[in-house]
Amino acid sequence: MNIVFAASECVPFAKTGGLADVVGSLPQALADLGHSVSVYLPKYKQTKLTDAKVLLRSVTIPFDDQYRFCSVLDGGKHSGVQFYFIDYPAFFERDALYGTPAGDYPDNAERFALYCRAVLESSKVLGVPDIFHCHDWQSALVPVLLRTSYADDPVFRNTHTVFTIHNIGYQGVFPPDTLPLLMLPWDLFTINKMEFWGKVNFLKAALVFSDHLTTVSRKYAQEIQNSEYGFGLEGVLRSRAGSLSGIINGVDYEEWSPARDKFIVRQYTQENLDGKKECKYDLLRQFGLEKVSIDLPVIGIVSRFVAQKGFDLIGEIASDLARMPLIVTALGSGEKEYQELLLRLHRQHPERFAVKVAYDNALAHKIEAGADMFLMPSRYEPSGLNQMYSLKYGTVPLVRDRRPG
Ligand code: ADP
Ligand code: GLC
Image 1 (cartoon, rainbow, N blue to C red):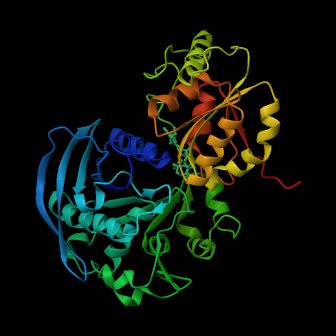
Image 2: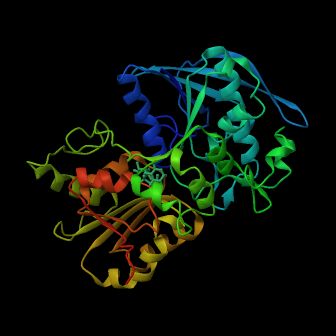
Image 3: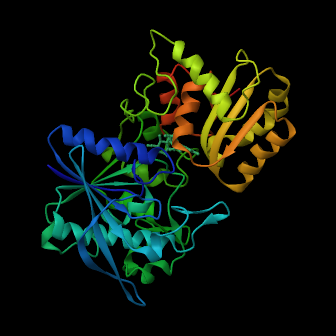
């Protein structure tokens, strides 16, 4: 089969969270099974490409006020998977993928609508797939356009769509006038299509228009069908329950295994944990804590700084933690509120809380390997790769017990 992935993140090109890990490894696994797989990504400022050839110099994307013209770059073939990049510097040459600590970029609807239309238009030239596999709201307009504006395009007559929900907390909700701006028909603005409490909801429309839906664990497939975890889309999901599968995320053990990890000072295995102690020394060194006793337990945190990850719960018990003989090493970036919370804890208790506000892949690996425990008290967690990595690294994951009482 010919499968095209459309997603906004992918290791090693651009990443903010687990979506990138999955889009980095699932296409390879499908290629290993004999499928022909390509991945389309936006070309961000952060995306490092060497000598990328321009494959399509001009792809026309209509907006109501003007046409925009993007190009498509050849990212080459890696482990049997072909990569393409949608290049439109006015939208993607920015300091971050989606926004700043203060909030999302105001033109995210235009940015990712351009990306989705570009995927459809370029695939007509570079190879029409049997299946578009789209991920999260940023690629949600691919199935929507395919069944609306592109419904009569003979080229896509036999093309089907799979849409994976990685996190239903992010939906791409915009004001109604986004529809004419993006040249989308007003008849989409109904309760059983794209309308959501008077606004336009990209994710909702993908849930309506995709042929099949998947999400990243069996439990999450059930959870999002009820009001506690469905973020308002539980009704739509219940109406599509027959086409929704929960498939647990896999882990790429080439990348995340203490026996192979290229970022840690000494590799180790389940049978011989000697290297883990050296990794702990190294981790303390990374945070300038070389003087503290190696016998103190170290709790690691690697996270996007967002409410989902339960930072308010950490805040609530911070003074108890500060009285305990342990060290917390935290790495993360995201919302200002949680950055400030962690930096404040560091200022108040420098001997307990070591904090780095950054996105740093090497340090993320060092924390997984060097910490004794991994703290991830998420309010909800669709799948959660970090706690799965922790199991592999012999780093006990501490998670939130959601049972009542
Ligand atoms: P989510 O996808 O919700 O962010 P996951 O636990 O599934 O949560 O995946 C998070 C991924 O992002 C992991 O690979 C983790 O190592 C990585 N990550 C998160 N924050 C950072 C950061 N500040 N620096 C480096 N890696 C990070
Ligand atoms: C999302 C979820 C996370 C999941 C990841 C990859 O970011 O929050 O739980 O592991 O996607 O599917």
